[in-house]
Amino acid sequence: MIQFTLEEIITQDGLMHQGLLHIPEKPNGKVLLWIHGLTGTFYSNVQKMNLFAEELAKSGTAFAAFHTRGHDYITCTHKLDPMKPKGWVYETIGAGVEHFPDCVKDIDAALSFLAAKGLPKVILAGNSTGANKACYYAGSVDDPRVTGVVLSGPMSDRYSATDEETNKKHRAVMEQKIKEGKGDELLTGFDFFPLTPKRWMSLLGAGSEEDVFNYHDTEGALVTFGRIKVPLLVVFGGSDEHADRPVSEIQKAFDAHATSTSYKSIVVPDADHGFTGKEDIFVREVTAWAASMYRS
Image (cartoon, rainbow, N blue to C red; front, side):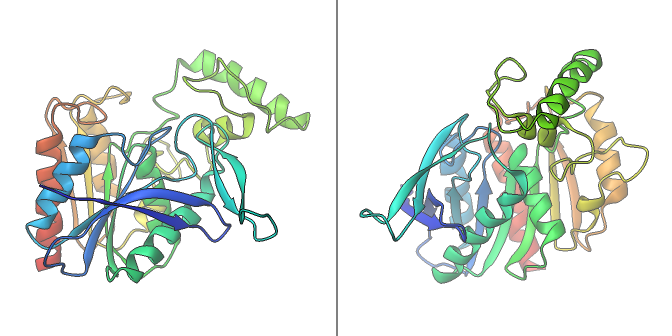
């Protein structure tokens, strides 16, 4: 039976994120770091976490997953403050108020923690917005600790948003709010979770730093993705509900822009965005790729 330990990482700006870690009996110094999606948590899919740990352990690879500052809708965490009696203060975080580029701080903290645990070789694996974050980090930061990347369900939030006319109206509201200095005002009714105008623009605005999966833009498509040079696996659900066009077309766009020296893309037939009911197939594909990548 797989046994996890509960762990905590601290980011360079003092945020304290909880997570889990499984180190096999005979560790090989390698680890797969799972990055959860929009409003998710490190424990969002217990079955998937257990399957990853079990399969990875067969080759001696560890498994880890931590919260990011985008977990849940709106929540809070502890932030270090040595001037306070407890040594920390409460900090409001969550998907609705997240500043996307700060995901670099979350990932860096996890990488540093894992290296200190004797796990210096890390595969970044993210689903949905977690894939955006893994792509953004690997394509923007030259970090030798990252030895591979898995992008799971890399759908564009902008393309899969509500109809174009509604999206245009929402954008006008957000731009006006920001112009009025209300970019941090929490709003409801513009997505499935409450979010600020700044967060809306990051998530659904063209050209934002978060907009790394702009696979059907006529210019500047998948630039950040194209900068990833380490071994790279992209996994699509064949029936992803967030795909605005046939998944095969999206896959071809990624294939055309990949520059990694070791690249592979696959489609899990009939799988939805989170691979619901197909977790075992998804995990086996990812872990088999990871094992072959480390053998090469």
